[in-house]
Image (cartoon, rainbow, N blue to C red; front, side, top):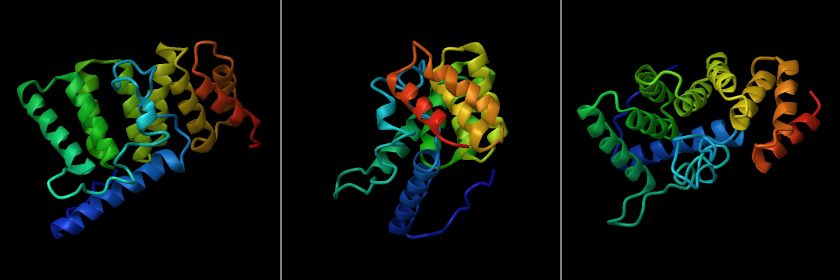
Length: 216
């Protein structure tokens, strides 16, 4: 992963740069990719409900593409995110092993396009609470955003092994197998399982069926 370089720009230019970065990340993670939503109603402890509809896959966040700064005296979405990051860092200064704070900070950095920072924080969360499904899910998203597809698959594989009925993780894993790791047979097997999964949401089952109908 390549860390984003620092630029000494004027405040207005810096804000435009942040917005462009967020918009680009949205395209990578949501628009042009196929991974299922980051914020997922069935993902335990990942985000407050009602969840995924507001966020990454599809729709990575209210500030991803349209987060222009608010009017004078009004904070824009990126300012709110940075305020949230500062609050989480304050929590972590008091308890470096606060898993919820680590996870939420990782998610915020991921939304801001800083996948490397997200991975670092989420790795700490997994050290503090090994096998945590919500953190594994976010790690899969972060590694995917960083272009580490094999690593991303490994995290989704761990979820599917622990929770065979986690349809969203299975769907994401299938798409990485198909599009990034050239494992079409394994992808088809997972997609069929998701399409037939009784406990899965109608949305993810629909996506699985659509993928099954596509020609390789």
